[in-house]
Length: 345
Image 1 (tube, one colour):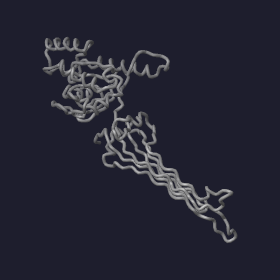
Image 2 (cartoon, rainbow, N blue to C red):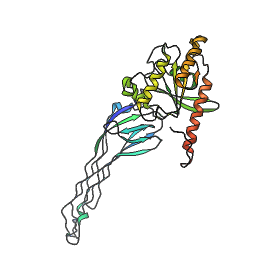
Image 3 (tube, rainbow, N blue to C red):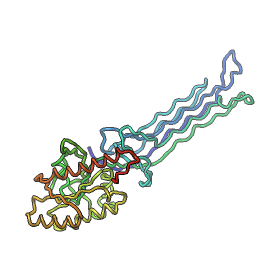
Image 4 (cartoon, rainbow, N blue to C red):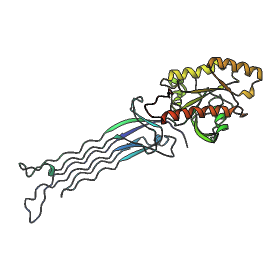
């Protein structure tokens, strides 16, 4: 199935049905009075998160969603039928944005969560509604309320516990394949990964979900290489794993590029708990590895893991560190609101 994480859709709710002007006519009742029924309400447009979806690809082929109009009222006090609603079924983690692509209308993060995007118009009153002691035979009825039209954007942000960051060809897909059930495309050239991948990682009898996003480049926060959309997929993660290619000739510069992009992206992404690992250590001799490791630790200002996704060296310690950060996040979320543990997402 093809992956799509951004889609534009046009919505229109149903218009309300018109009220009816009618009078009862029976052989034994010459002056039966008004009996026009009300119009039916127009259908609504809803968005709902469902299980089993991980892409917005369906919205590439259908961009217009129109709810049904309400039916007009009829004689004998019959109310018109209400128009059918229409429901946009989206993956969990989808944001609905205004046409400006900035204002968030709703963020659906749980299965079954529903939100009303466009309300159908009310049906108009029939002439029976206007009968009074002063006006026994009203000849007026209300038209139904008009439909609501709007354009919205759907933006999918994957829901994962941990996210992989790094420049192209840093070994993120190899790491994910070595530690999870995911089978991303792996090759020895940049931009092998073109869409985000999810994998379930197991460590010490526990599991968590990790997201591998395509490699970032300088200027990603401004949309270069659509990096701003890729960064959106790790916004919800409890911890970020930053892989640095140990075979690069500019290890420290590579590290700093990603950090700069996180800071420029905005929000609290740069402050998110982060684990740094020097990857591809199996391809570096011991002296160079020690030198690079020390230089990177000075740049990071903390611990740097030495790992190899291909040789599967040092992976368990990294996964345990990720699991600890996830547990800390869960502990904070489940703690009473009055208790401040100091952790910030």
